[in-house]
Length: 358
Image (tube, rainbow, N blue to C red; front, side):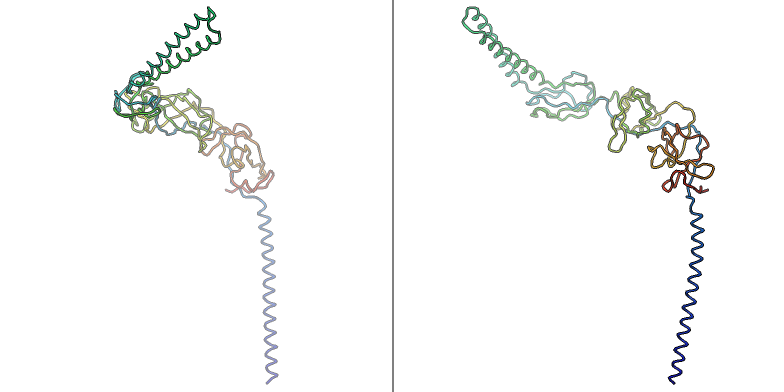
């Protein structure tokens, strides 16, 4: 009985050893196959897969449109220059006013008293000056005393002029010709220096405020004519000129530009309306163009990979021109028919073997 158990154990061990040997042989065979496949893949994968594009010569569309808002050519916020009570308000919101027109009157009683007091002080100083100048001839006063009374007379005259200016400022006058957009004052109000009184706008001439990117701003010049459309008048066209181009970009890296309209017939356009500036430029000769993606890193790098006849990538310096949409004008460095690499550049260096994808 014991002998039979020993035999069964030995048979089991032999079967287990045979199974282990078979598994080891299969694994070794698979390893050899995988190594062979890896070698083949490694050999085939030495060429970097890339996408390419052929350099073409085309006519670039340089015209572009940008949207913005109309703003008044002039806008003035008038404030009180003196403290006092408003006795009269002579205009309402919507009233048209001209330069120099009186809009409101501030109580002048105290100001008139100040003028009278300053006038009396000045006349007294003049009399003192005359008396001292006569006295110096007889030796009754010194030259220093004469100089002092002359200075007092000059100071009194300055104070009188200041009082007269303050009294004149009691009438609030318009500094531009335009329309009263807001009236923030009523008769009887007590105002202090700096109190807001009126907001005046001149809409006889309007400005269209827009922003353009760095490529677009390079094509603009102050004084250039521009066609302008208003969203509320789609069938009408207005003419204007570029009057301002910001020397510095804003936080969004765009450049503010202002276009002043030549006229606003009937004041049909109002500040705050939406408008579109239509920038058009003379047609230029066809240019060599490549996709923006052809540049290594960005267009600022001025480097592209060119595919030669042996499917080898060659790094070539170029000079980029205008960027129109997704295409870039090439001024120097490439010829028509050259093949540039547009994707996969991150894996390339000068002289890399590549495999163009269809």
